[in-house]
Length: 181
Image 1 (cartoon, rainbow, N blue to C red):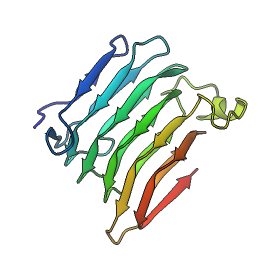
Image 2 (cartoon, rainbow, N blue to C red):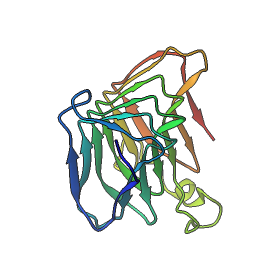
Image 3 (tube, helix red, strand yellow):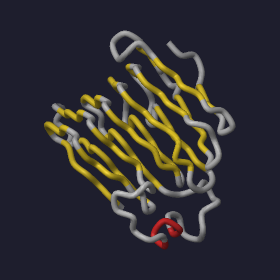
Image 4 (cartoon, rainbow, N blue to C red):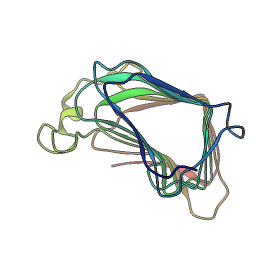
């Protein structure tokens, strides 16, 4: 059980590796894990955890400048987290793979804005960039399992401010949708 927020600073490359969801369980309560990313930072990886009873944005990946691409979230599970399990903010790209999202209101939320350091209107810079479909400048969501059996329609992914993602080889069941704005 965590008793405070945990922040991995941008100048650290770190691997947080648990024994697997169900074996390494973290009860978050009101706290969250935040990964600060920068273009030049070393790889960051979070793997093998079950995050339980977390606040909105239980795992936040945040970049305040351009192009951080060196992170991976894999083999994790989010249980009783509301309303967002993973929040990706800023111009940062990485991979979310082999994760389980049961009954999450919004599993993944992506916004490409840089906390007041954006170029004009929030998301404006992203829209001005060339489309690189399937290229490196996106958040990749692969081989994950999304299942929503609650009555409120959940969202597999929600984006705003020009958020870009590649969604492939996933399983989606129940009341789940996709929203962009």
